Image 1 (spheres, rainbow, N blue to C red):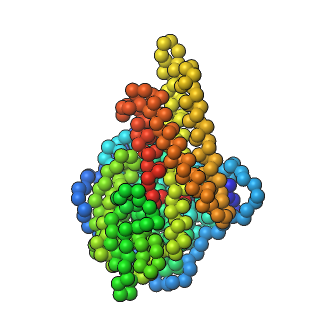
Image 2 (cartoon, rainbow, N blue to C red):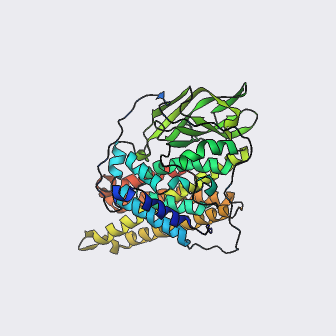
Image 3 (cartoon, one colour):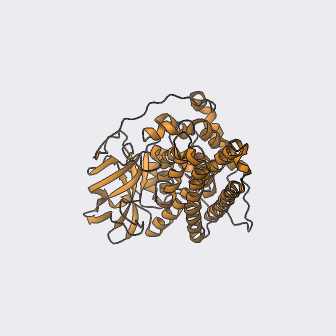
Length: 435
């Protein structure tokens, strides 16, 4: 695992919790919060409802970059003390808050603002922002990002995606932003009032390829005219800032920073098969004018963004698959048929064993990929393997989870049918989250 700075990210997270009112608001024990959800919105509507103003800082110099850890030659899966502290905080939050509220959040296709505010209290958007820009650490840690994604998804993947969406935008700006872009936007993510933000990559078309984009940015005066349609945009109706993937004239596929208040930006709800609590939307860009300095990073940085996004989805798959396995193990050992637990049947026992083996394989490959990212090594192959295994075996674990419960697996009385639908997203979603 990657080492962290001496003060410790985990300790900083606990300090933020101690200084905030989050403990009083949900106590890390109270699973019966009453929340106010947002009403449904139909049709495309202008997204420029945000009151926040991002004060532009003009500077083309390279911004601050998180450092990478030096290779040690040893592949160690043991989390550092800092990582373990952070994961324990997030796991308890997922267990006590996200999991009890998952059914209600899915019913309204949204994650409550109270819950999103609580993730801000323990610095979820700060993990990969450099310390001198208001973040938690000077060192890059994709491993920590994967562990946090896994821990959140163990509660509910849909709400986890909603919680991680602002962090994805903050991470992208921290990794590839210019000095001006970082000074303009990162201070908002490092403050107490973290803006809703979304990384918009996917497009609503068959066999979507993130490197062959139909969203375009054409040269127009001193900037670009952006046009296209994006899907799978997390909390699009509330987002104040988007990082949009587009084919930029003269450059190729790139990331572009788009503020929700820009003319021509419209959103519409786009409820999906799974991840309903993420509040997925479509984002329509109708001749949106952006300045030349709105382009974020290079074409190679865009490729790296796609890889790191896929790594984050792999982490989410681990959390939901682990929860599915735990639920199934408990069910088959307590459910009786013909006078004995169904786990005594060989076919059931072998299926559960296969689920455990598949989960361990997924986790090993995903953490190895994240470890190589932290060391600054080429991780393209490992990330591709993690994507392949988590998409294939994550879906299989979801299917086997439903099958092991028989008729109970098909009804909403048990959560495995929701986990099955959420796990299906791993192989089709692009963007949205980032480590």
